[in-house]
Amino acid sequence: MRATVTVMLKQGVLDPQGEAVRHALGALGFDGVEGVRQGKVIELDLADGTSEDTVKAMCDKLLANTVIESYSISMG
Amino acid sequence: MKAAVIVFPGSNCDRDLAVAFRKAGFSVDMVWHKDPTLPEGVDIVGIPGGFSFGDYLRCGAIAGQSPVMQAVAAHVNRGGYALGICNGFQVLCETGLLPGALMRNAGLKFICRMQTLRVETTNSVFTQSYAEGQQIEIPLAHHDGNYVTDAEGLAALKAEDRVAFRYVGNPNGATDDIAGVLSDNRRVLGMMPHPERVIDASHGGTDGWAMFTGLTQALVAA
Image 1: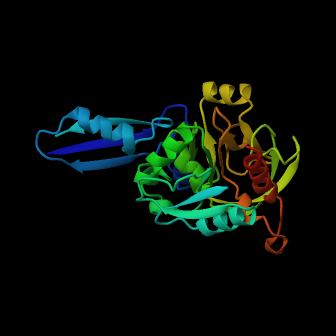
Image 2: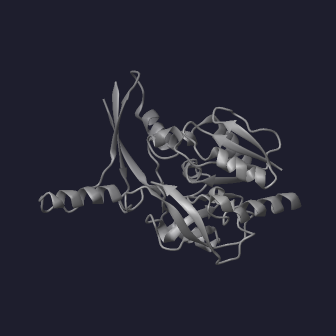
């Protein structure tokens, strides 16, 4: 089975990389891009029966830094 | 007086930090990250700069989970001293031994140059040999030194006089110009600039030396 973890900077935390991407899109002529936030996607191949709670523990302990990041988990 | 310097795969300031400790009169043990214990009788743990585990996932994240960090946490929790510089500061934040987090520099560039800092408190063994408000020149070498803490965390750091150093001219977007912070018991310091690189005039400066002499004085007196 597979779990997909999406890690994003929390709302309110400035994202300098996202801002740089937004500026670059503007420079390429893509108007109207009002915000860009960059995060990461982590795919986990897991033994069958692994619970979402276990994946949540992985996120809290290592995959995300919850001081600045939030995460969401998609199982299956 | 005994110091332990932790070595991770990718540490690159570990020997510099050991040289600084030795010059200040410490005996130094280098401790590999897989060691589950620290040597007997260690007074201070140094967590050096570098790129532990290639900065994979987040700077300091993998190092923060290494076996030796549990021993470091136990050392800190019984009142031991610890000094984390650059990547070492990132590791201490990742383990929760210091508050906040270090993000990518606001200008997105790696910064490698001398930086003026202001000493904000002399109430710690690390800063007691400086004068409050003193400006010192310490080199920077980081890509992720943008210190972030929320409003509540910042208020606590200020109320408890735990901001050790601020940048004079913010190089990386750090919250409130913060370059280094102390733990609540004032025995753990994390900072992005590299004091261990300026302890010898032939290397371009000596403004970092007072940190190590301060440590020596404090630990001899203790």
